[in-house]
Amino acid sequence: MSVRWGLIGASTIARQFMIDAIRAQGDGEVAAVMSSSPERAQAYARENGIPASVSTLDALLAADIDAVYISTTNELHLEQGLAAIKAGKHVLCEKPLALTSADARSMVAAAKKAGIVFGTNHHLRNAGAHRAMRDAIAAGRIGKPIAARVFHSVYLPENLQGWRIARPEAGGGVVLDITVHDADTLRFVLGDDPIEISAFTQSAGMAGGGLEDGAMCIWRFKSGVIAQSHEGFMTKFAGTGFEVHGSEGSLIATNVMTQKPVGSVLLRTANGEEELSFDREDLYTRSLRQFHAAIRGEGQPSATGEDGIWSLASAEAALQSSKTGKAVTIDPQLGSLA
Ligand code: NDP
Image 1 (cartoon, rainbow, N blue to C red):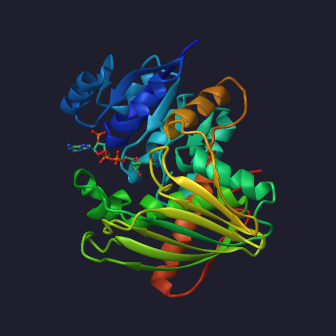
Image 2 (cartoon, rainbow, N blue to C red; image 1 turned 90 degrees about the vertical axis):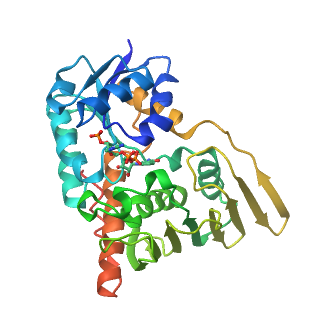
């Protein structure tokens, strides 16, 4: 039986990655798209070969679909997610799940109560590079992890220089855009949860409306590991990376904080240097495969709703820290709905 998807949002991310990822599943179909504008819905459907287009959420949820992918601007995720859950549809929601972790929590709790599958579209934990790092750490290849560094300051492409840098009410800003991904990737690779964050943010010239376009965060994890991360929209030439340094070795990954299955991971120990091999499957295709499996009752989405609560709570803590100038603690129970 195929999984029929409804797209909530005529977005760039769906066009660039998610429609293909759904269609790459043997049992995936993009059945309908919803845009707030009927013209945009029709044009988007035509350009992307989607059979139906609608301009209201009710019409989409009344269509013959099994699951929705929500990729509207961030302030809309909560209301759309709750409506989809109420209609009994499985939900794959973009990050951040909502504008506050309390709202994200209520949505994830509603999904759990309704017994539907709910996932957060954190793509990076689907990257072969990050899975290779996680496996190497779990296998003890760097000994005891001590510290991590994340380099995730990029240049926001011109076609995306809209709500992200102009509309605080839509959940703009680099922290809700990129720090959430770093939170999730740090948690995934380290197999650990953050308990405290301190952050500086800046508005270096791209973002308006009081929004930040750069952030540097310092993280403390439950195990005692400390980390630093840099997120930005304005650095054209920085490159990305992810490092974890342990008592017996270091993992140094380059060009891995991206949407593509690229980059390299180097393991450096007393024995010398070794390039780790990893699979190069498209990140979003892998995410969709796990989501479809979860619908069949096999396992969970690669990033769950709880993972989405964690990443948003971390971003929230970073924003609060940047305003107060103080480190902010994260409630360790926050991500758990047990
Ligand atoms: P876009 O700006 O492309 O789309 C967001 C919304 O903007 C759409 O739903 C659409 O509204 C509206 N919109 C799009 N084009 C136009 C236009 N020409 N005129 C007027 N309105 C328009 O956003 P992204 O695709 O970059 O991001 C969407 C979501 O996905 C966000 O939550 C973001 O955080 C997340 N994201 C996640 C990524 C990941 O890798 N996990 C990567 C990129 C984004 P309507 O639907 O009503 O037409």
